[in-house]
Image 1 (cartoon, rainbow, N blue to C red):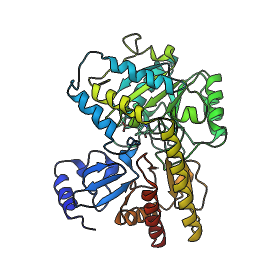
Image 2: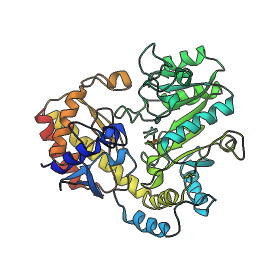
Image 3: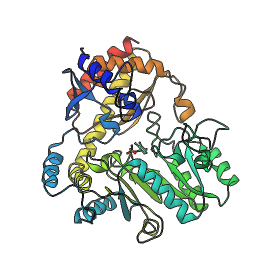
Image 4: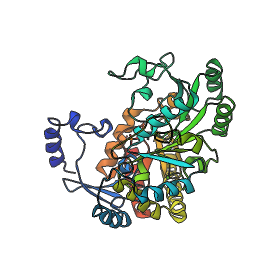
Length: 421
Ligand SMILES: *Cc1c(COP(=O)(O)O)cnc(C)c1O
């Protein structure tokens, strides 16, 4: 494979963009390929290489790249204007769609990114409960705002994870391990009447893919409810991916608030906070908790979401389910044949293989995997026309456009990659 043009663009871009990219994970070594276009299940780079794409923009592109329905409706919308600064009817239509699909959603506030959504949901929880402390899980990602950029590790709770985040901004953030009932119970008991919310990715998708164990979410619902703590499901990944109504429908657990991003915009930037009306109504202007945005509810993103929901019907999720099973079964057969004792985690269209023989159920166990080995695997896959996110701590996604042939080709590439490790 030839990467000459990508290399040249990368060498140029580092002069003008920090690290040559606009978001850190994109900068893999020695340099990322530069994309020219994307269609269906595939990315095409500037050197003429094509890749079956399992990164899918880190989650949003569940309907496949350049989806025909979304293209058509977006072109119609662009002619009607792209930012209004006054309300438009389509905002009501998309809000109703979300409310129809998502069990906890009675009212919606749209914003522009997953980061904005979790930042605002946490503010809402603090405003509603008049408490400051929040609980998040070790290794969970809720975007790039101060309160959630907290260092992981025992004894590190409340310390900033990176320079520029003041300790004042993180001191009220308490970390607990995922899937650990005892740790959660202890923290809640030690902080009686002080905790505003627990925020959770119902399936952890930013340390690979870690589903909740057995009745963990049910436990969490009960303990938060009995302590008047708001439960926030951060469904920026799982929303409209795990099922039509997201993880809360899939696991049948109804949180107080939910945050969305990624898929909801139909490929355009978006975020949303939804939940019980009595809470969401407390956002300004009906309430006093401040939340605002110039591009919030902008017609391109709202219209993109409406178009996406036309594609995301029951049959779509049934097909996606089958594809996920087919991929994981294939991977599992390859690992068995090669006598590699690695872990395959997944649910529906989310999958990750961990380079460890240990079961992976939280951040500590995820860290046991050989992430250097994983990077070799990533590069082997790339050489064989398969693009996955370049980290053990990301998740592989399927879209409605991934064909059986795509997945078979992918499994062949995986076999080569695992063999050559
Ligand atoms: C991607 C992500 C976010 C942040 O969303 P952005 O749109 O990138 O700001 C928040 N939470 C989760 C679970 C995510 O995966």
